Image (cartoon, rainbow over all chains, first blue to last red):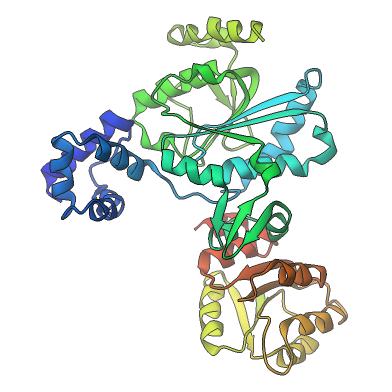
Length: 291
Length: 128
């Protein structure tokens, strides 16, 4: 790949997905886009770039999808799911005891391991949630990835990453060499295609937002923009969960980290927010009043 | 240093498992069947057993039954590691006292994940 081609792809990805690659991510581009080029019967990255410059819209989608898809496994990093069980849900159960409903958004749902992990965690809470309305909305940029998430079918290799064997036995059905998530669990999740760069106000407000390992790919201004818009979709006492390498600190004061709970954030008191963020407040109140 | 007994009739599998487990800072001993593994356990119980199912002389499931009845035999974490990948075998292993279950083929990530799952290594280590 020539430096000119790399620069073209960097700018292309920034414009189309907000993905912000540093100057040394050639290997990432090659590992993700070479297979795609081969599949499209192109000789390599060079010809792929030519096609993109020629305006092939089918390729635009596949290139963005190939570059933004992440490796994911069940209960990834474990700690956020411990927080979910031990900190987030006990508080939500107390705070929502009146209306007995909880809305959760997986903003980078990918191939489904994260939303299914949350669904299993909720099931494991048993009686504490009996009679509750539980909504999990899993969104991802890639249609291909969403299809896999929706099907809930995983290889033997995938079900052995992060998933305790008891959970595999309890929540999956074996079909040949693959394992499929039980219908009951699948019914807990709505899958929708969504680009975080676009408006997501139509999703409504959430008690919990998992937005892990996706913002790392965005530049600073995009991150700030997304945080500010996430703040409008989260209940005043809700929780935001970020990936291990991500933080709001130094970017926005719409959220504040929870002490001793790595990766966990709460919305700040709206009155404490900077004027630039103040626009978020009326719309949140409007949504809540409309419920 | 924690100890792990690797029980498998394939010397190649034992060698691969040893390399992975030593990377996770285990002191590894090996046995080629359940009977030899039991002799080792009667002398000193390991912290962990990585256990194949189908082996000559004594299979993994029978070995686990004997080992669990030894004084202190409820302590070691038993992680099956076998080509038997059906629900019936997994259920049998779990009800017989296994702590985790790996379906072959395996790699370092799977072993690290499963060992972290049963508390043999810290969670962070599994992520490396």
